[in-house]
Length: 435
Image (cartoon, rainbow, N blue to C red; front, side, top):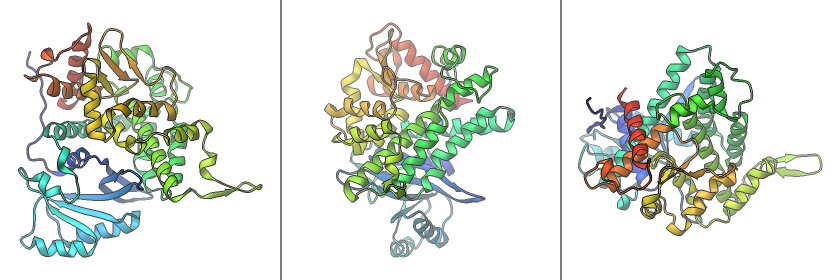
């Protein structure tokens, strides 16, 4: 039986070129959002990449990065200037694959518009070309490839969701998942005030409770609108015991993405509040005005207040992007020190504060027994309900880092099922992208 493999294009174009450059931005320590769409009565605009920089004692800095792998000119520069004004950002950049003969002239016009214009070579010198907008000191080629695979997984899961929504119109779950993803990824981004954004995201989070369980209930013959606290054993076992890709890969991706969006909004609010005072609107309650923040659930507010005491909480949005979508949401216990060192290097959190960073998830989203649980038959601690393809990507990452010959069976491991789990997860990840 032939071994199935997948590979990244050496010279990417189109959407894959955007992902190629986004991976460099991600690896420089930025929080990255991609393909953000302002869709109202019609589609107003689509932003290629939005980055957020989190520095100590500083308000988060957002940047718009547009990418052109083909032709471009002055219209693109003026369009970016207009978009910056529309979304309220000060910083923009245009990254182009094909420079003009009079590139310096175009760069000067871009500078006058407050835009960085950077020509990115196809192979060598990408890091150097990006130096004006990134910190290139921590970049590792292996990490670039892992992030590109991560974006590919996301793109494939969303493609499958769109396909299922169109082909199975009688199912409510696919329409609900698509709507929920649009709310958390697109619509909330264009909410101007940071506390309004946190409130909207948290309300959306509460309005779509247990969406994986509700989806699984409908797919098992029940009604999507019925209360469902647990995922039926058959569907859960197919995904997490037999390691087969099913619709839980889509729903758990959207659920985790929602929690991460809520956490980012909470951290953003906390930082802005501490530096500039409460940015929220005031609501007249008859007995006086109170902030919208005070109207959020007490458990959520207490979670934000507790996280505020953590010295590196400003890096938590970056930390959770790396842990979920890069490391696959698990810690390989046989290599815990190396795992924590990797997270520390990539996320800017000292090793001694990594456990505190993990605790933040449970502070905002309380879960009985916590979110990170140890496996009985393997030396792996894993987040509950991480999407299976990203677990497979995390397995692939460990093969690259802990095996000298890049083979799973030469990774130093203990536990009866640790090796088998890593291989099954990896096969699921490869199978999704190979289809």
